[in-house]
Length: 255
Ligand SMILES: CSCCC(=O)C(=O)COP(=O)(O)O
Ligand SMILES: [Mg+2]
Image (cartoon, helix red, strand yellow):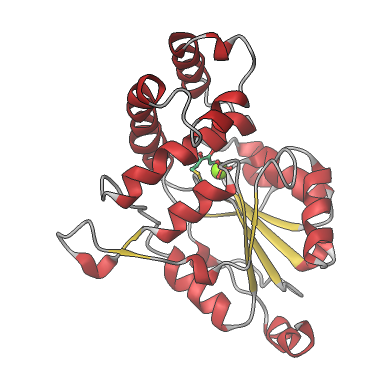
């Protein structure tokens, strides 16, 4: 158990590699988006719903459906976190969530700990490279542990989340200025925000902005170096983090 974190009113959470496995994104969501794209670009190239996503891409990618598909495949293979790709992915994932092709596998500690923090009047906020639309889909279709063999039974956890940030409304996740902006938007002092991420560069940027921050080391994440482990607080479960009693008193002043 780590030392308690003090004066935390807001818990800011990354998604991929922090609350859900990287494999869900890479092996389920990304392939689904590419498959869905193949039909969308030929059937709905000029449709009113697809056109805004298409038009956000660079002109050379918009030259033809084939050029568009090649460009999206390349960005996806390189996991480029660029807003126009992330917005398109959200659009393409919606049908998969809604028709039950997949649902979100959160790590087992996540729902109980988020519920506990929510019940302790902590503000829970998401900051992911995935678009806000995609974040809401992901939290809106969480695998229900009581669902057993029925993988289609899902929970909507959006109600636990008090705020949503992506690269469009906050900025890039490696930039300290993005974390400053998030704290300002929330009306909180940076040091009252505790950020969790699998990505050491994101944790470094949050600390530079004055936030408290912890690296989350999950199965399937990139291995952390010894230097990272010595430099940053690292946990393998959100259960390992205790927010001190002093912060529980904080709720009386919060709202
Ligand atoms: C929330 S959408 C699915 C994840 C995704 O596309 C992504 O880029 C996640 O990046 P994160 O910043 O949450 O590591
Ligand atoms: Mg991540």
